[in-house]
Length: 181
Image (tube, rainbow, N blue to C red; front, side, top):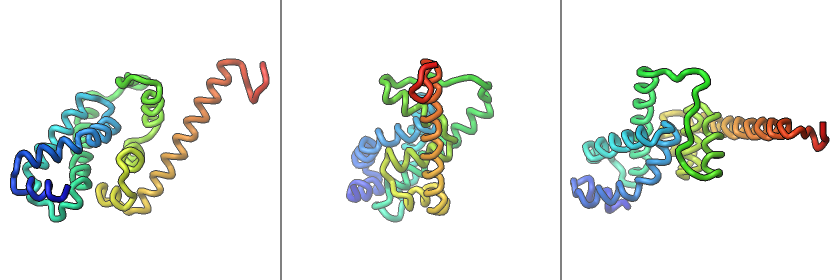
């Protein structure tokens, strides 16, 4: 990948297109987790690709291309999120429709929805994209211990949400601690 980055830094369009093709799925997952909208995710990805093309010459170490790209994407997602919030603040009780088919994706979306954006971003980067806490800290410009704390908090929040959902299901069915009401 380093050779592709070096070629792209010399404005080799084919190399740059190949880099973007390789990162497309990862970029989508991060953008979708932050923005929860296919259209907004596509906008963030498009802005990121343009910014990368324009600024790839400023990347000092080709080994950090993926980290650099993800940081630009997160910044673009945050800008779109802020703009969307200014234009139309979400009404209480309004729920986002889950656009991805499948029960596993729907459950994953529900758990991510219970997280604040700062936790959701860290969870996506760590568990889905496979970045190390050190790399995430560099991307987000925060201390590595802060990232670890956010991951621990996110795990705790998701676990609590899971237990709340499970308890609610048991109460609905008239079962409390394996006893019938």
